[in-house]
Amino acid sequence: MEDPVPAGTWVRRHALATRLWHWANAAVLAGLLMSGLMIFNAHPRLYWGEYGANFDVPWLEIGAIGERGAVSLGGRTFDTTGVLGVSRGADGSPVALAFPEWATIPSTYNLADGRLWHLGLAPLLVALWCGYGAWMVAGGHLKRNLWPRNGEWKPAHIARDVLDHLRLRFGSGVRYNILQKLAYLAVLLVLLPLVIVTGLAMAPGMDAAWPWLTEVWGGRQSARSVHFLCASGLVGFFIVHIVMVVLAGPVREVRAMVTGWWRVR
Image (cartoon, rainbow, N blue to C red):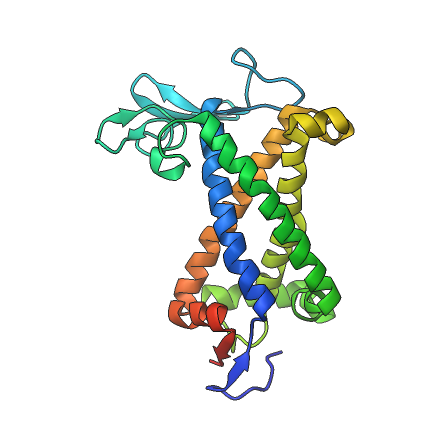
C-alpha cells in the first residue's frame, strides 16, 4: 500500500551513505568489468572443474571463425560479428577479440595492464561492500527500506507490481516497491558477495593460503565461470536499472540520487 504522502511533496529519499556508495560503487564496478573483459580476452573460454586449456571443451567460447565473430554456447554457435569475436577497431579495421576494444580497459590488448587495473580496484569493491553493508545493518536501512514486508512476499502482490511496471505505473516513489527490493537484495546479498568470493578463489595467493576457497566451487575454472556469470548478472541489472530510470523520469531519479530529495509523483 502506498504511503499517504500528497503528490508534489518533497521527501528525503536517499541517505548520504547510500548516495556516496551508489556513485563510488558504480565507478569501481565499471572499471572492474572493463578490465575483467580485457583479462577474459586473453583466454575467451569458460569451463567447469579445476582445469581448462585450449584443448579442453568449454561451455562458453567467444572467438572468430574465419573473419566472422562467433559465440559457442551449449553446443550451438551464433554469429556475433561486429559485437563479439570480431569487431571494428578505432581505425575501422576488423579486430579479432572476444570483447571489442571500446568495452575494455585498456582499450588495446594488454593483459598485464588489465590485471593491474582489476587487482587495484578489487580491494575498493570489497571495502565499499563491507562498509555499506555494516551501515545498512547498523542503521536499520536493510530492515526498514529493503527487506520486503510480510504482505509483499505474496505472489499476488508481486504479480500486481509486475503488471504495474508493464503499464509504466510506478506509484508515488516514496518507498521501494517489491521488484526494486528484490533486485537490490539480489545485487547486495548475492551477486556482489559471489563476485568477491570467486575473485578471491582465483587469486594464486589466496588459493595457496586457503585451498578450500577454490575447492568449494569444484575447481578454479568453476570459480571463474561463476565469477563471469555473476558479473554478467550485474551488467543485466545495470541495463534494466537504466531503462527504468529513463522510463520513470531521468531528471527526477538522478536528482534524488545526487541531492537525496524526491518529489512525490
